[in-house]
Image (tube, rainbow, N blue to C red; front, side):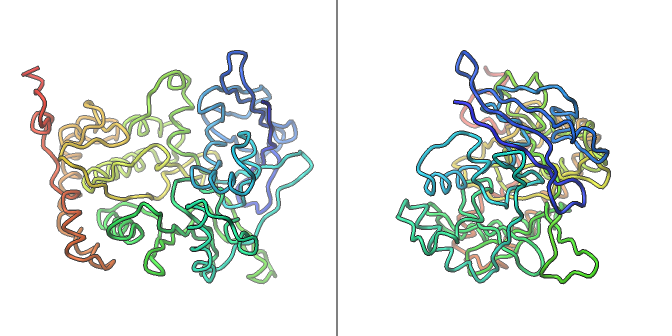
Length: 431
């Protein structure tokens, strides 16, 4: 089945989108999903035009093709709703839909600076967002959708703004205190300490470790408000605050960066922290600084058992220099309790793959422009800060002693090397 969408981009400082190209999704003769994208001639002549992807979709009149990522180019994949958003769209529109329908039916809160329309003459309209007062009414509606209950038509509009955000947790974009915030609601499979409080505590702990994170606050006991780092209010001279528009900054996930390399597209490679550090040389406006920050985040995720650090939970945000990027603030940091001390991250961290050990963390340090002794010093500092402060950060969010005890294994000291960490299996010398 062939479907298509017209792609629009918010260029730097603009508050209205510019038509930039056309995306068509179909199948190859062998049945593989195939995506095609071509930039518009007028966009290519625009002196302010920027590529959707500086690595894979450079400004060119050629027609780009891909069969990777279900035939959806990385930047479009980043703008597409994930599990929760797709579930909402399918509930509202009657089941599974063509790929481009999820781009067209999602609302105006998607990550990054892309929007979509069904025709070249139909400019996507900017939408307004509700205030914080909608959170409680929306809670019941979102829970009903999650449980596949019928949607009250009079309340259905409450769920509309959140369909474009990624992830599996119910979400809603609201306007609060002059900024846009993503409200993350509790999910039906949550148990123990509210995930909002747990994530809020980990973001605070990460900042103590010298990591740049999103701004966040817990409201209504179990809803986490996360400030949108890809949006900024723009005031035009003489306008009132209520009439101000939003600037939208480009965002690409680590997955998009990895799949921009044709060598990766034909493999099952999921990427790694060292690989992302290497790729920063091609798109970051502050390569060494971002590499050092990325190493610190990698170590922190290992120290707090955030093993859901997959390639869509890391990203690059448009920098000050047009066409270049910086690491986005860290987000989605939640510890996971494991049955053994032997843990693996979602992304590879060193020569031994994703296995969490100090030795493995240090093994990749050169990719981050660090010497072994400097990498070791960062590991020591992050681990000490985590050990000293994790309980206090959780207590600030209202965690009980029982809840903290249940999580204590997440903050255990890192295993020193691979042999010590190879519980229940032969070491390299015994195999």
